[in-house]
Length: 140
Length: 304
Image (cartoon, rainbow over all chains, first blue to last red; front, side, top):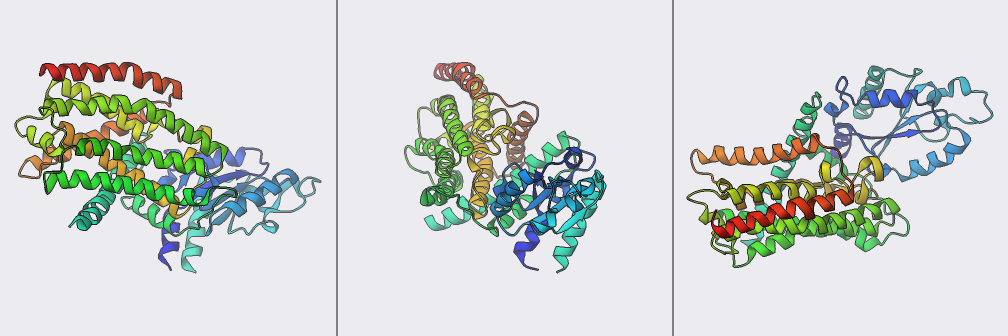
């Protein structure tokens, strides 16, 4: 594994992007930063600017309005970057599967590296998912 | 020889100590919030990671200025750190290096302003304009506070004379020294853009301010510059008020204690205060802080 990738996995800065979620997953993401879970132990920081991001956390069901913004933001992330789909909506559109407003699931729009199901997923599940992602990318 | 000073002391030693300082800062912050905090090598890993990322240049940005701004900033820090190291351990310096140090310490802020305006982003421009106002606010009390050791050392503007004048007793032991030290620590807080005065960065308002559009190596150099500044500014305060780094015998413990103490005070101020508005910051620096600094200068002239 190259030094570049090794360093990336040791300090993944996450950017949080909501594509029309009900805010429940977003609240659970913020829980990961609290003293109980403290993901800064693994070098993860929640950052405000897309240009600083390494990992894109996508929540929500990708409705028509947000898909264009999602594409623009994905193009702006400095590569290499990873994409994590959080929640059932981002994974498979959930109960909005037959909605007029959610025509395409997330993984048909941008490549997704790991899915974390749940409505909302627990912070433990998110951390476990990210650990699996790190193992998958690090092992390759 | 100049090259060795610049590369080994000005860059390498300052960068390593600065990154360690930033780890202390992050760890103390985490402990204040009952968290565990990042591992020891985290700041080093962050820099290595950022060096390996892609550089995205925003459309319509002034390309040359955008790319050269971080280099200008880090060269300013390397120059001023070299000046301090050389004055501390190797030679007598030259007449007026106190003035040169004050000028060079303003260059990192100027490079951030330059980078923010060059990146053609409204929020980055807003961050730059706030940084500019903050520079105007803190420079006056900072220079007045830095003037106190000059007066106490008999009017010499050589850093080595200031260090030698404190062989008998440090300036922080006088009333004027303590007042000036308080003002200087507040100004260092603003120079580093830490929390009560992090108005130019303000993650929750303007998503990172002037550095918003920077990615990859540019951001790595800016972060390294800030971390090096986090070592250089406490080093400057130690030279001015505590007689420099003394590495003989038991004094080594005092030096470490002084350094970690100043860093800890800065971190605790950062963790226990909310962000102020830019007008409040300007009023704070031009009002109470300037008055305190003037009082310190007058006391120093009286010989107290």
